Length: 155
Image (cartoon, rainbow, N blue to C red; front, side, top):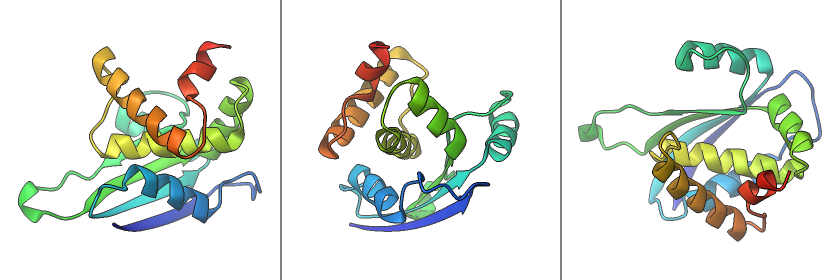
């Protein structure tokens, strides 16, 4: 397995609460462990940037936690480019507090969630959501984190 991971940080505050490059890489690699070679960009941003992207690409107003942009390449190119993931640091921090989760666990979940979107998983339909959630739970468990969905249900 080889992964070309471009990590970009464009966050207004220099919070030490942001995950390290090593943590981000571990979370991505755990999801992609059965991939031969993958390339992706992981961008940490502020609310202004994620709000703009959310409005432009999803026609939704306001900020969100994570957006994934799968690469749309013709199959005949056969390139390992998966796409881009954009995560808003402020939103992740707010959600972790609101949901009474550790910040690290919530970051891990958002990265794992974003990577599964790049792999083609979605949660629009209930049956698709169940499949995606089960995969996320399994990966997070391998990483030593609790089921993020059962934590949310208990609040």
